[in-house]
Length: 417
Image (tube, rainbow, N blue to C red; front, side):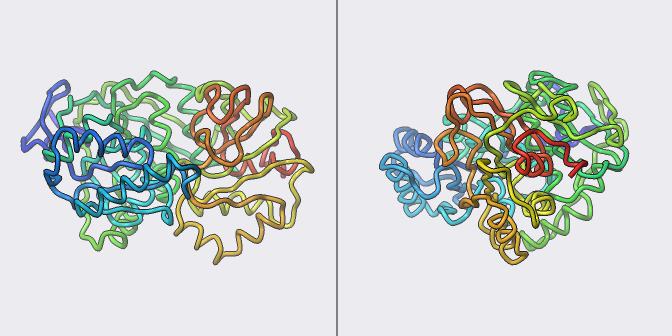
């Protein structure tokens, strides 16, 4: 019997020639990452358990700041200082407030390769499956163990296969695809399971679109999301890491528990209505719904490609009077490229506010929190009650749909703009 990609990764990391679904194995960890949210607890627990003992391998640990940039209050500042001090003491790489969303920062700085085993204190670590990595979010204790021993145990999950064909309609893209899939699968449809996306449509995606697709596997309760590496990802990672990049594929007789097929030609712009990411309908079903605010950014849609999609609609236009349009690049590198391309000018002239790179309006505590009764369109990945303000409502969508809706102050079909 052949093996899926996740089986091959676990086999390599555990030192076995082959593994089967349900096996419980100790795996070598290629990268253990913590952030300014959750990271301080990791450091405190590590010190309590291991004192001044060095981490197993400082080059396989990383600290990123992405939630509160710069620090918004004394507690956050103290937490970030704690992490800076730990990095100084241990030699662990630290990516400070000038960087941006953690997973994106790790990618840009060459710390991620296909088929690495990566754990971190962020539930959306599995977006790194965009380049074929086995990446997943873990709790404080697991991360402490990974730092101290270089290993964690995992149960080999079942794997689903989603095959995607067809050509996207105009102003339709990866976010619409993953929302459509989420509606089909549900928020608990992949509980502790892996999923591989493949097919001509996926193969044609650039790295940014793959990130968008993988970033919402978490919303299906998936343990791992994976896309096989191809020329695009190998070129990107070779530049980031210095190469070489190994390319792996699932075996032809790999044991998938289920296969689903999708044709993107049939998918119009999608919107997830409050209060669940799988409450998805066509944008046509919500036309004219009043909104107060629009957010373009997050780990799901904060790449420069996402900003370009929004700018293409906003250029030469003005947002609806009273509309609050907030745009946040995923990283400082994305921000620099957006400035070089003139995208900031387009946003500002249209009436948008451009904020510093960070997770921004993925959660409460950032500029743009909703008042009770406020409604926002967001390119983030979750719209649960209270996510960015008690009593507010969140509709999830693509950058194109978000930008089009900002122009009119109501949910708008980007194909009609």
